[in-house]
Length: 358
Image (cartoon, rainbow, N blue to C red; front, side, top):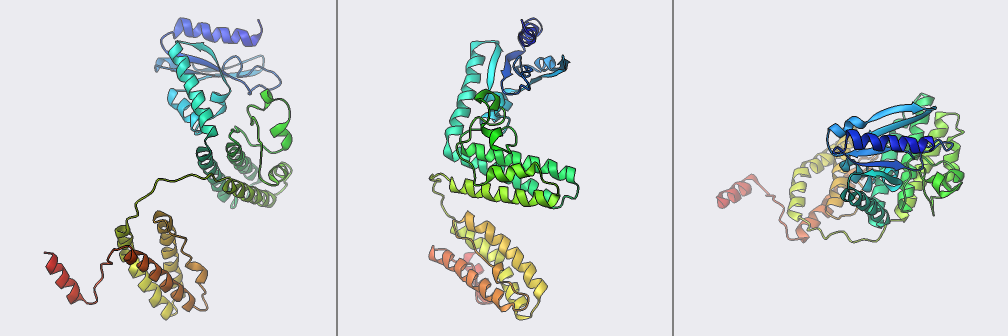
């Protein structure tokens, strides 16, 4: 019996004798081996069913090979089905010990859910967008990084998330950054499991840009390469957007009217600032109004409202005219959908209306 088999038997015996009512499953995970060292094949983790079961957890080295016998709850396993936890620990898993058939069935059901999710084009598209957002968040930090060792670390994580996004679009997963075609496709299926089982299609020049990260000598090179990678990956994902029907949402035009009535003062201020050549104030309120328009457009199924392309510090009339045009568009949408804007020509009119409501 080799060391791998002996370690598996040791863990099983320990569970049976010391934790028979505390452990549901002992799981091995293929794809983690380095030079056939057996890591992960004897066991990778266990699923506890009591707090006491977590006491089985331990780390140790045998003949230079590290082993980490650690707990993963059922809740964490469920997150693996939605790609919010490591995927390979479920997809590449092999049961080494089970307390009951019910535990086996529950685990196999999770594996099937993962397979189903990876085949769902809407699900994987949305998860790919999440990973793209993760990559872009780190890229924002990289823009201000001045230390090369930190920049390289950030570059690795950016490529990790981009690799995951591309893998999801392919209906599979990646647990680490993929930099080269050889890494993605070389060798046999078993030794690719941890990196990525298969990529049928990738963004244009994806591997070319990624491989240059490994030889980049400056932070500026890394920034430029990662900008290209994010751009081609974003285009790749957008081009793979599935055709699906969102649930029909009832548009509340009364809420849009309320929003406009609250923001109408901002439009008025912008007109005043533009008329009086108050550049700083016009830009400040223009930025605020633009941010509000970007929020309101998708919420009410409207096209993007472009206000700030018209800003010109040397000629504020352009901003004034564009803001007036957009205000008219908003007002027309509200009134054409049968909602009255709560406005009055004079204070007396407002007071009279309020008295009537009483």
